Image 1 (cartoon, helix red, strand yellow):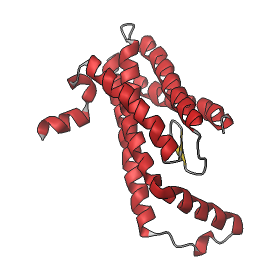
Image 2 (cartoon, one colour):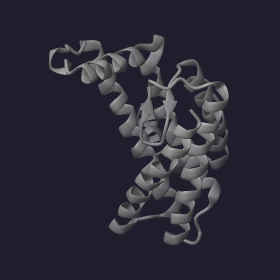
Image 3 (cartoon, helix red, strand yellow):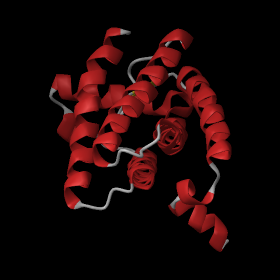
Image 4 (cartoon, one colour):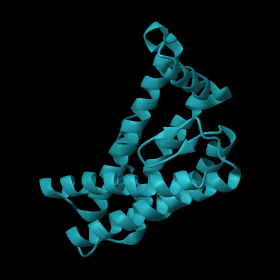
Amino acid sequence: MNNLLQVLKNPFSLISEKKLLLIALISMFVGVFLCYFLQIQMQILRINPTKAPTFLQALLTNCIIVFSLTIGLYGLGKFINKKTRLIDIFNAVTIALIPAYISLFQNLNGFLTIETNKIQSAIKQGTITSLSTPFVFIIVTLIGLFFFIYYIYLLFTGFKTATNAKKAWHYVLFFTLLILIDFLTSGLINSLY
């Protein structure tokens, strides 16, 4: 049990890069299918249950996410530490996405899409104050938030491990770049739909 907790805390320092790469490639493949079958659009810092992707859109979206995060974080990693390797950043990005892929199960049977559409409709009609939020929706949202936080944690931990980042300004640059990459790619991803 203690080993499992250590792996969940920092898989990048405990699992060999070849195993991480294999897990990463399998998770990317599974992630594309989850986006498609659960009919949910994924972006770097959000999911959009109101946009149902085709298989090609799900594939392109995931490729955009992985490519942009890998290139952006690799560039920052090289700035911080010249010895940063592309494979380590790629593994960090793709392994970190596993909790994000798990969070897509929020839309099982279109649950999240239905509830989101109800909320958007109530906002448009001005009846949001009279809308009662189902308890299940609150629980599902909190579980999704947990997986989102774990995704960011793994991305940050993987980046720190790959670059040996230790200074506060490294962390500030990481989070600033993450938000910037999300902003830049969200327009590209939305243009696919």
